[in-house]
Length: 338
Image 1 (cartoon, rainbow, N blue to C red):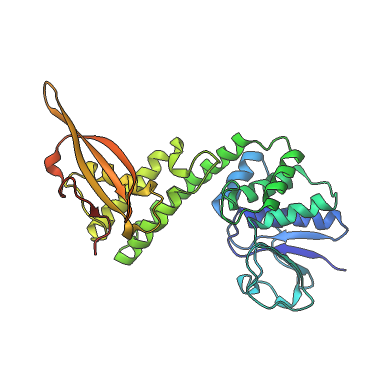
Image 2: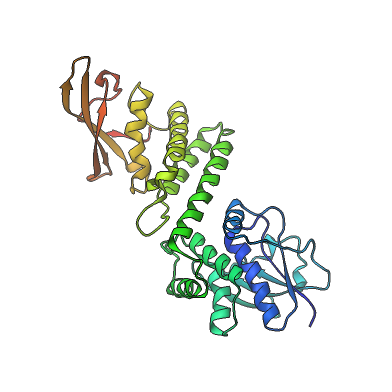
């Protein structure tokens, strides 16, 4: 029968790591000698979850030539160039099948939230006891990949398997999930901000504008998106300010004010907007009221975020000087410069 090595693509995420770790355990418990192999550095998220729960990853250093290969979280042999394709005997994946696989490869491929769901369901359906470490990793793999079971590809199977995993390990809790996801995002934001420092072209910053707005809307729980998490607010707004600076400089978006702080105040609502296409967004600023104080006057404005038809939201803000506005009040001004 020979040995089995479970592996995935280079730089695997939490879904890939959890699937490798747990399916190797499953094979061992069903009579097949198995280890797993991690190629190159893994992403930040698996490290955070492992540190939280004291889980040590013990990947083998290399793949033996005579080993049978099982791929998880990918069904494309081109994604694993370090593997001899002729040695692949099984594939477990949740991505769309893109290649014709040889007949000798057995596979389970279902377009759902996570490969971790498919692996965990092997334990569940076959009544195989699952270890504490595998239950934790698989659960977090599902929650990470499906954005806490809220992504569009989340299936009923993901939901049922996640609930089953909760029942297998009393260390899994909503509080721990949120703590892990928040810590992961803190590390991601540090890396992301460092990476975009090297961007110079208009095209790069246009992509960043869309990417980061999408990122802000990612659900971290059933109640809130990443943008709403107070522990991440400072880092997120710092990154938004960097993006605004560069997009104004590259003449991608309208410079609504000569005051940097006022411009940030106006444009921050764009990143919370659910209007899909930035080109459909216009902003209208209205003077609402003013209050004369002993030493100065405080002005209040409303910032309206509009799509082509109606306002998605209108927000009130306090500002120091209306003369710093670069646009006419009471008029819709397109966000994206043509």
